[in-house]
Amino acid sequence: MKIALFLDFDGTLTKENINSWQYFRKKYKVVPGPHFDLYSEEKTPEGMERIIREWTSHDYEQLSCHITKRDISAFLNNIAHFRKGIEELSKEIEKNDSIIYVAIISGGYPDIVKRFAKNKGWDVYTSEVKPLGNGKYETIIGMHGLVKKQIMTDVIKKLSRKYKEKVLGVYIADDPPSEDGKKRLKGYELEDYGEDIFRIYMGKNNDNNDQPTVEDFYGVIREVQKLV
Image (cartoon, rainbow, N blue to C red; front, side, top):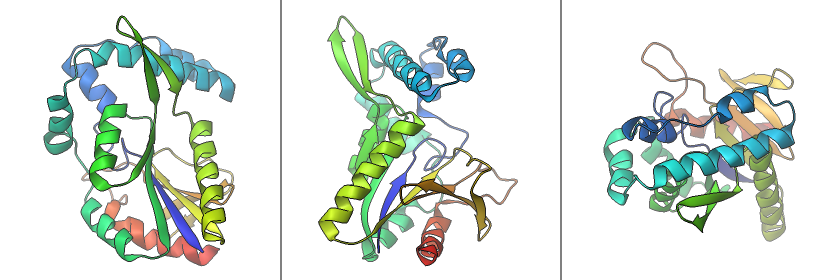
């Protein structure tokens, strides 16, 4: 069995207390649109996905005219509070023959996520925005939960055909799992995400609790392998 590893960015690789969209909104005094309330009131997955696309287009239009390449470098090098152990995780992945694929899959600010993934040599799936001219953008892909799951499912199927064996997806994120199908694994919450994907819940991270850090990822992945 092989493993395809998918990592969220904001709140997972970075600590919960900083978010790339929120940071730049605050820095440039950009007020977000009404999409948060619209999203929280929407009842259908299709409606949520539509709002995410509209939300991303609106916020990207407001921020892209301000954010520079220097801002992006400064955020990644000096501002983002990354969880401990990311470099150690990268080295462990390189040594593990079972992990055949690594990607960041995130709805974070696209230019930030792409730069980080490129620096690591990992693939990236994030919101895709297309310029329309006059400072306007259209979101082609918005990173709603269903979109992420479909991307991961498609990648796993392609890798299974390529390697001619079962490929398990491990998705590590900070969004809480549902109560159905949730189980504990070495103190972590693990959810069967369907389609040969397990989701590991990172939880919040601060100085007053014992929630996992990146240093714990590799041990959890080994435990997941035992379940299959």
